Image (cartoon, helix red, strand yellow):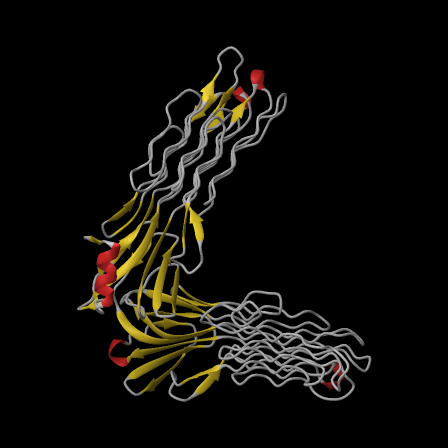
Length: 541
């Protein structure tokens, strides 16, 4: 299948030909598995996996097998007999082939570093760079291997670092991949030698040689970066294993809503859809459905006796849109539980909900990660509120609300009171208008007044203290965050629990199979059949 030039892709997209009669112009990044490294001092590092970005024409009516290359194995010694390392495996889909990284002193996507006086491995043109050189001194036994080549730079010489990889922002965040592994060495008569660092982009560090001691083994390349393994340290028969190469990855991105199913992670946000493959499977054709996935809400924080506390829990992340199901494939719906609050305890993150590569994050807390929190996930939630002046006004030590799927949590200030939970978002996917993903209200450390209101969409209200019942829990199967509570009147309190998540599929009735496990609720809405999972189960398309 022909690849497009960057200019050709841009011109086609400018005229709107991103999906014509099933044609999809996709950006991709394919990274092969990194090469393994040899054992003992003087070995070269493994080369990074081949790094291949570009554009390709796909057809949404076709299915494409995606093969993710495994990292090469590291070499080792058994009774003084060496078992050599192996090359990394190729990553491929459609006509795209990224070449596996070379083992020590072997050609590959990027070449492996030389072992002593041996030749270095060469990189594949357009995919990687050469390994570094080494040396061996026969009279003293001093030796060093070269660093494995990386996608962006050659490996260092004489026990040097692995070559640097290259950075890509195809997933939305800049990530380096395909760095080379470091080379190892030994000084005169087995003297000390510090192995080379791994190249940025997942390359493994080489082991060290310590005279009259064991030394250290090489470090493996990082999984799903295609990093080369680091060479083993240790002198002569005491040589330690080399590191394995890191496995590869493939990322396929295109404009618009999902056109395929498949991938370990699918993100459809801001006008693009990205399929990330960290293991081998398929980019598959299928039919379109409507989908709602909501993560479990975070619990609000509590407070001890006569002590401050009371942050509202963030709502679970919400994914609402279209997806592609492939006939005959069974999809597992894992519904995230809401977090459980503890008496006088901190806020707790909710649990993720997942379906066929889609991931709705559990709600977060003020310093945690999650769908609707201070560090919210783009496209799934909003930040929690912030702290203002804590005292001096009528409200003593108010606390902010948790973020919601539709709006940020309310701020807290002594003059305005505790923050309300952020609002959720509404949908009629099940046939009636319902809100999901409301944030929990903030608590208040005061003898009078109440906590912040929970956000529409199941967010729990905040409260003053345990004497008034503590924070309200988020509503079940909405992903609502729990309300916070603050200690007052010498009464410790707990925040509210987070509400559990939910997964809803609205499938054209003409394609509905009736094959499922678990206890989903099955209803109809117009021409669609609605499958509602409030606990985990499966659906076969």
